[in-house]
Length: 147
Image 1 (cartoon, one colour):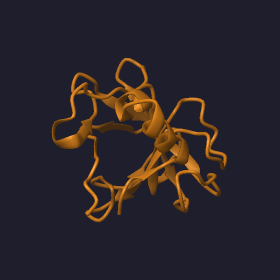
Image 2 (image 1 turned 30 degrees about the vertical axis):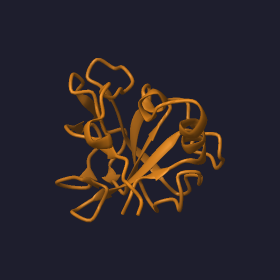
Image 3 (image 1 turned 135 degrees about the horizontal axis):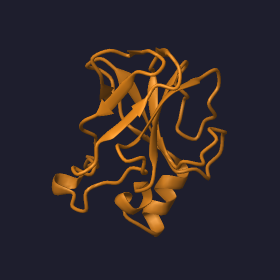
Image 4 (image 1 turned 90 degrees about the horizontal axis):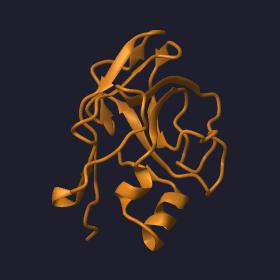
């Protein structure tokens, strides 16, 4: 699998900014249900299970350097949240706080599958209970060379 970048994220990266500057200020939202075909697709039949912010309630940020063309979560932040609902996590979207999940090409989003070894984000269990606290200890986006 691979992270899916929205049209707006790619447009901004092409003309106006770094991946860090585009993604700083996002939240990480974990959903149940069918994984949308693209990050531009609407949520459909999905339930928001968990929203991660920093441990002090702020939006997420990334390191200011990208060794090996890899953007990493800020090492000084703890990305954490309490489950809003119980269920099975299927995918995550890194998105701006005001994103409504509707279809379109105007939203900054990174979409990733959640699960076992073949998923983009590997977790020990995809099951989550209402109120359960989760912490994302490591998160990185590698920009790969296409050959």
